[in-house]
Each structure stands twice: as C-alpha cells, then as structure tokens.
Image (tube, rainbow, N blue to C red; front, side):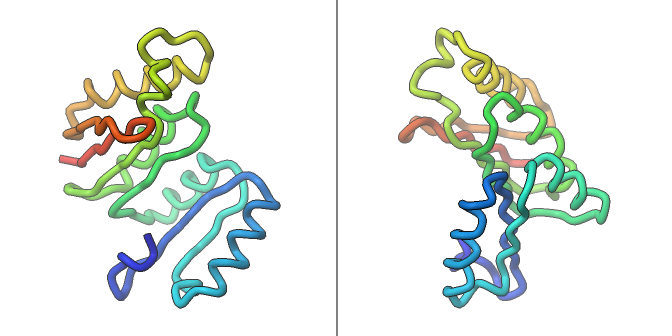
Length: 139
C-alpha cells in the first residue's frame, strides 16, 4: 500500500500483537516509506477512537481485524472518511460460513455484510475473490 501513497500520504496500521508489531516496524524502517508509516500497538478500536478525537481523516481503511467487531470498526471509521473514500473489508465470505453461521465470528461477519447493505451512507460491492472482499464507498 505504501508505494501507492501520494507524496503527502501516510499509512496507519494497527495491531494488537507486540511481537508482530516489532517485526513489522523493523521491516517498515528498511523501506523508503518507513517514515510515512505509523504503527499503532493496541486494540484497533481504541487506536481509531484516539485518532477520531484529533479529527484525523482517512481516504481508505482496510479492515482485517476481529471479525466479531467489524460493524463497530466500520461505524467508527466511516465518519472519518470523506465522500468518495473507501472502507475495504477482508474475509466477508468467510469460507462460506456466512451462509450458515455457527460461531460468534461467523455471525459477526454476517452482521457486517447485512449492515453495509442497509447503510445509506455507502455504496458497496462484495467481490468473490479469495475469502471475499467488500468495498464500501462513502457517498
């Protein structure tokens, strides 16, 4: 994603795993984009909340987090995205388990899918690639 950034663009990523975060930061620092990548360690929703308080905005959010909380993540970041901005959610077909949900995670993905279809603030399309990718464009 970083190579696609405009000259003044920034990439913000959140992860709750301190080991994965340390490894990622080491690799980010070895790229020409390292100074444009901010890695937030901790709960993603908490990181988003703190950025919302500073009125930070995002042109695009890639959502690949705790599936049970996808609706919460989407609802929290949508006001931070201008018209024309995107939320791209990964795993929205969830290996087909959204058709007959059993676990809390299955139900979380299904809730998200139903939620974005009903949300009049976005246009959306689900792409049947890999495990499903849903692209929501803020109207």
